[in-house]
Amino acid sequence: MTFTRTLPLTDISQADACSSPLARAAIAPDHADSLARSLKALADPARLRIISIVAAHADAEACVCDLTDQLTLSQPTISHHLKVLVDAGFLSRAKRGTWSYYSLVPGSLDSVAGVLAAV
Amino acid sequence: MTFTRTLPLTDISQADACSSPLARAAIAPDHADSLARSLKALADPARLRIISIVAAHADAEACVCDLTDQLTLSQPTISHHLKVLVDAGFLSRAKRGTWSYYSLVPGSLDSVAGVLAAV
DNA sequence: TCCTTAGATTGACATTGGTCAATGTATTGA
DNA sequence: TCAATACATTGACCAATGTCAATCTAAGGA
Image 1 (cartoon, rainbow over the protein chains, first blue to last red):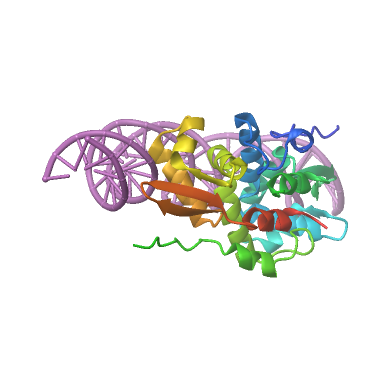
Image 2 (cartoon, each protein chain N blue to C red; image 1 turned 180 degrees about the vertical axis):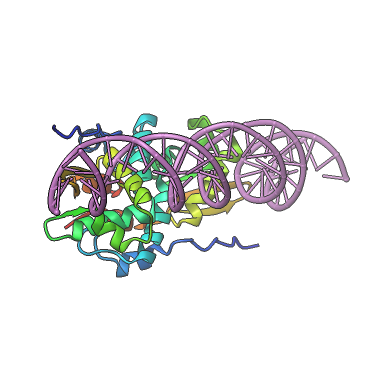
């Protein structure tokens, strides 16, 4: 059985392609919606720590057990945050055996950072 | 009477000074809290549009009337969003006569973008 | 002085969002 | 086949958030 990957709510690669920096000109309403969804996914302490832990891991991959060790949150709550980050396109999930391994989607953070950076 | 500026909830200049990129190593919980507060302030379509409109203005300054023209939101709601952005340190307010002029705090967006940018 | 205008504040409301206990689903090992 | 393990999902609860109507404050102008 293959793992079916959830379609990201926000297509970050597209956002990267067509959006000018926030400060250049007034952005379109739907662009604002899309960017806000991405930022909302990041705007939580637990999720920022999850991203950071995943990124800092040896091969930029971490399983849920790595996270439950370091975060003082229940396993369902961590699963919830992981789902939010996968849906937003920041993390991808690979299931091997009983374990789920999460890794950063390359460039996903940078594209958001790029939109925020003025000039 | 002088205008008393609200203290930013998140000291962005400090965040810029002491924080490594998100991906380098696992960030400390209080860093995550601080960054999440900044991101939460940005993670709203109306507020992103406000920032964009202010930044795109001639001298990077806009009054509330400029915003009520372009956003389909009530004046109190726009005032609310402006307060959130000022409190978070992204906008500053200058009152001249009856009008309030808002402008971008230089570097505030970049410091958030810098933390998000990996490598 | 009074009215008008620009904007901030308050209060109320509905929606969203973070959290956990309980349960469900695969996968592995005995 | 059965038990244990790793993780996801569901449902419920409370807190936080976005929105607006109503009101308040302050600055000009007649």
